[in-house]
Image 1 (cartoon, rainbow, N blue to C red):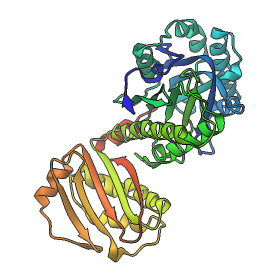
Image 2 (image 1 turned 30 degrees about the horizontal axis):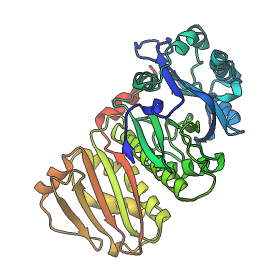
Image 3 (image 1 turned 90 degrees about the vertical axis):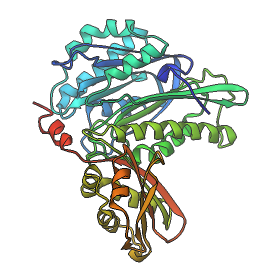
Image 4 (image 1 turned 180 degrees about the horizontal axis):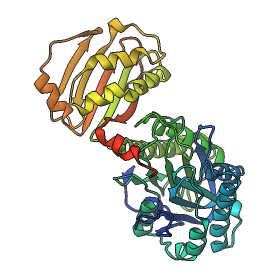
Length: 410
């Protein structure tokens, strides 16, 4: 697998674009995006588990029932959530407008929205700009970047990836973009994420690969403990690479699934690093648990702890908070077998072991502070039980998180 450029436009048969249509009333940034495939794609998606779902989620779930798509239209600046029948009508209208550009069925268009909840979507702004949106499409990285900018809200960093693998003798590409820096605590992916690929793959296996990738990436990220109303992770496969159709779980499926997982992990880590107000990316690496599921719950409990996150911001090696967070994870374990270390992900500042067999160790506070001053920190936890392991990602909790969200709507 090699990294390439181009994002969602890297795979064959895809174009993308983005424009400013005026949904973000006080912004001059793009706010309307479109991704389009020249051919009908096999598609799969996972959506928010929040019982309160945005209109875009409800419409896209219906449009994905047959596992086929041609396009995604997405807006930022307005979530179109908790907006009643008017919101449903607006979401349907967005699909119709995109479909009219290409003379396709609205059911072949997924709709996504992100932004403020409870405010009617100004659909007239979309209607007045749809022709310009169609004209913005291109099959190069510029098209990808325009679409990526158009889905961002409080994001400070871009989140995208594109890779190439060889299946048989055919190069197969996967490209992706995502947005998300707040309301990040999934039971899906608390984000918008769009993935394109030119692989030929059955819908069932595409769905399986996507769900596994989401489970080990976006479902292991937390910023603030909130699950959004608008979460959507969607993949479209055009089949344009010309590889032999992947319709069984053989070597080609394994290679494709691994590449998709790598792309999703890269985006998930970028989301954690770009958490609202964050200054540090936290990697929680749990080993020695009873099984992977237990390790995941333990890691997420630590990553979600406000006290742990605050300690990381303050560069305080307060390992007791880590052990405490393990203790309320709901997973049974023997506290007297737990070891904890902290390390800089760069490796430059070394590693400090702060806890052994559930008890504190003498350690240099100065050395620990050097590690915690880094932008990427790893907390290593060995449960001393069996061989189960999992990694979760989070960020520190800073004053700026409150500043950003205290007046987000007004």
